[in-house]
Structure formats: C-alpha cells, structure tokens
Image 1 (tube, rainbow, N blue to C red):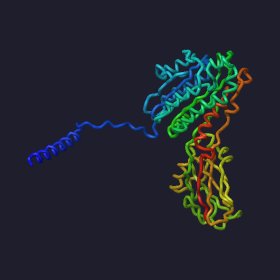
Image 2: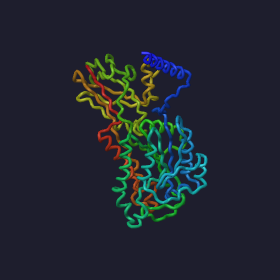
Image 3: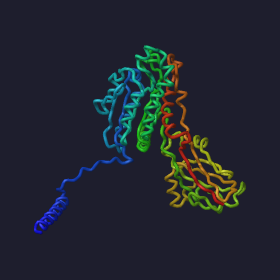
Length: 432
C-alpha cells in the first residue's frame, strides 16, 4: 500500500514537473514539419538547354539573350517563394549552375555555354519534370527540335524525318503522360530571335546562319494551382511578351457562377434564386426575359478567355426552350455598375466575365439549362512546324517536327481527361 501511494506520488510529481518545464519552454518540443501553402511557390528551377544547336542564339546581339536574361532576373524577384532560384544547364544530364543570377546573366553574354552534344528532348523533359513537384515550378529554355542521337543519324540520315512522328512523339507522350497522371500541367511560351552560328538540320548537316530569325521556347511546368499563380505573376512582370502561348492540362472544369438579379436584367416578374430562375411564365419572343451570370475564367488559358473564343465555342443546351447567349462582356466593360447593390457589386468584383442570356420560349414547367465551354487547344504550332529544315525557305520561322512534339504533349493530357472535357460547365433551371 505504501508502494502504491509512493508510485502515485511520483507519477503526479512527474506530470507536474513536465507541465512546469513545458510552460517555461524548457521541455523538448517535437519538431514541426514545415508545410507549403497552396498559394506559395516552394522553388523556381530554371533550365537552359546547352546542346550545340543552341549556340547561335548566344552569339552576337540577339533577342534570345535579352529574353532569357530578363526571365532569370524576374524569376529571382517573384514572391512568395520559399527557396532561392535554382539555375541549371542541361543537355544530357542536368548540371547545377555554379553561380548566382548575376553571374548567369553575364555568362549568357561572355561564356560559350551551348557547346554540348545533341540532346534528346524526352530525357530533358523527364529531368525538368522531376523538379516540378512539391509546389515547385520548373522552366526549360530550348529550341525544341526533336532529334535522334548523333550515332543514329549517322547510320540513317532520314531517321528524324521518318520516325519523329512515331518514336520521338511517343517518347514525349510518355513523359507528359506521367506528369498528367500526377496532375502536373505545362505552359509553353514561343519567342523568336536572331541566330548567328551553326545550324544543324534534321540530317545533322551544318549550315552557317547570320542573323536568321529562329523560334525558341520556354516551358513552364508545375502543379495546376502553383502553375496558374506563377504564370500570372510572371506575365505581369515581363517586358517582352511571347509571340504565342499554349497551355496543357487546364484547371479542371469550372462549375461555379453567380446569378445576378438586376445586372443586365430585362423582363418584369422573374426571380433569381440560384441555381433557379423562377416566375418566367408568359415569356415569348415579344416578351423575352434577359438574365446575366458572372464567371471567373482567370484559371483558363489566355486564348480561352477571349471574346472570340467564347463566342465561337460556348454552347447553350436547353431542350426545346428558346435560350441563347446574347453577349459576353469582360468585367471592366460592364455598364451601369454604379447602380448595383453591395452583394451584386461583390459578385461582379469576383468575376472576370459576365454572360448575358435571352429567353424567348419556355414550354415546360421546368427546363434544365447547361452552358458548356469545350476544351479546344490552340493549334498555332502547326504553322510553325516543318519536316524539312535544310533550306532557309523550309525552316523560316519554323521548328523541325514541332507538330509531333506538341501533339505528343497534347495527347497525354487529352487521353487523361477524356475527349468530352470542358473548360466550363454551368447548370441552372428555368421555371415558369
């Protein structure tokens, strides 16, 4: 009995002592695992391809050096980013650049960086993609010329022309299919620059170019949310805007919207009760009703936010009811906003676009309406691709086998999402 009491006494004494020490911050604490917020970029990784085919972009006064220098400089200033900018050169295996941004920018002008052997793009994308995880972003600067290794071309000078559409495209597809599976998306920016130096055609024959304009590309790869955040911050700071842009992976289908009660309203008696519009009895051609909804399309590719794209591709399905899209307005173009009450003004502030619809016929007591915006990838790269780059006319403003590279990436994301994927799908009901 004495032993039991002593045991309880020691236990209580131990608990009290532990509490006292913890309150004095003397007790050891468990190490907390740092977490990365969804709106914070963990790290930005910047890769410059340095195969010999890139050398001409770095000779003399070229737009390439200006653009890449600006990218490196602006990347080091983007916030919030948890870790410093990581710089790499890459041809076969990625190499950490031994210096800071200032030294890297100076090297672009003074050091012959691009002197490595020819590279295989699928192995480069694999290594770049590995740095696009854990809320990090990875960028790659490359001429994006699909090519077999030198030894294969020596054995068969036509192999790039005959097998790029199958073997090389499938290698690219395999790398991006894995990224797509891991919900890692990609954006590609297209630029052009003077090229001074040795150009290697698809048969690896050398040609000296003096100032010929050549395309090059900067890829940005990362998780959907982080990539969207990064692209918004980057585009806001760039002085030189890309000639073209293409986004792969999208943001998932947008299903949220706000139904306005007074904005762009026509018709006297109907009521807005999201996702329903009620009391539409008596609507007809000469007594139509008009209503507006606000949507936030900021996560979509820039081309999918244009009025031209939306007008051409937005589809309204309403059975045998008479419902059509009347107009599309960017938020800043909407008129008479000063009349909006507080709640509607807030709804408008959170939208990027306002879609206004007209109802001219309604036969059923309840009619479901579906508004869809299907995914349509921009196809500018088709006009920027060539399969014979041996002459100036054949390669002017074009990249060898770019079509097969881009289609390999595109197929990876389309297969993952399915052919009926939509950027936008909104559902509402019209009631008499």
